[in-house]
Length: 464
Image 1: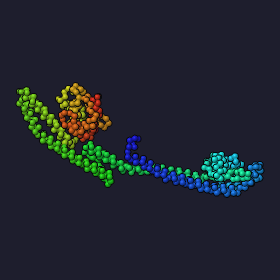
Image 2 (image 1 turned 90 degrees about the vertical axis):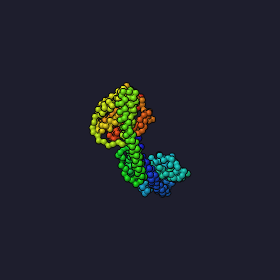
Image 3 (image 1 turned 90 degrees about the horizontal axis):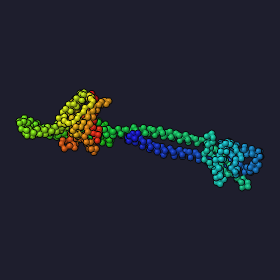
Image 4 (image 1 turned 120 degrees about the horizontal axis):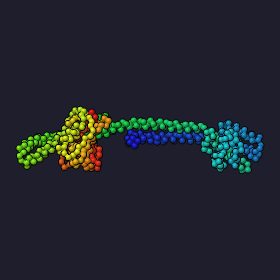
């Protein structure tokens, strides 16, 4: 998941989703609250008008008489009938009278809502006694219906007062709840659509960026086949053209450098051949003189070293195309071991396992020889060098492990670079050439480990 959110496309999708949410909230919430408040304000205005009209029709003397003589059913019924008439006229839910002790002594309409309102709105009732009129917030009864109450004080004889209560049905405000639900639903749909759209559109940006990344990696690895870039007419297209121009310039410089190296190697090769012939003739003529024989052998050895250097230069400068076939690798390593034993007779080279790979035997032999020679040079005599050949799925893996000193960590990334060497002799092309040959075979080579337990190089080749 962490790697997933490192991608620009997902970051853009998340940012777009957040922005869409903020826009929806900024637009929808004010609309919702404005609509709800407007409807509630209209209800409040109607309640104010209605309770004013009802209070004008109430005779304070009748109310005072009922309070003094609660057993007088005639007057009470008459007043109740008046309230019922007003209840139907204004489509109210309940109209009721509250005494000074906040007790209801007369109710017309929905008794349950009236009792509930008088119990939970004592604060508003008290406020009406001082302010003249007060409104309650919305409340719901046990059935879930929504109501709003208004209270108005009515003064009767002897400076006493009662409170007239009016409950109105506020069910129409439920439509604002539906409005809120629809806003949320539309917001979710728009959010999902915007995230999908942002993800799709961001792919048009991140896909060419990934192609450019692959293109840069191919340039760095010096691969012959470079990723094809689609032509674009924006900043990414300009960057791709710049990188393509850079690739051509690098390739041209590399070609010029290799031509220079090849020319120098050819110029050195001809006199070396003559020197080698003369050294061999000198060795034949000097067989009777031990001292001259020693010097001539030393000359021949140095000429051989120079010849190897020239061959490495040529192999690096002019990698040639070749055909491949399926060969077992163990006999190839056995041939290399026999050849390398002449220079490193005390090293114990063990070959374990076998397997077939599609290779050019001479080219791959050159790559294996360079790596095995490095292993011998890096380890002490009488130590083991283990070559393990194993087949893993469609890949043949070759491990070459020596017991020499570990390669310093700071130079490990450079060991496959051309002309990099920590030895006093040589030009630092052995591992670079081996890497080039292995990659020409469609394989890869890497340093698996280098520590106190030994240094291990691994070569992976396609199986035959």
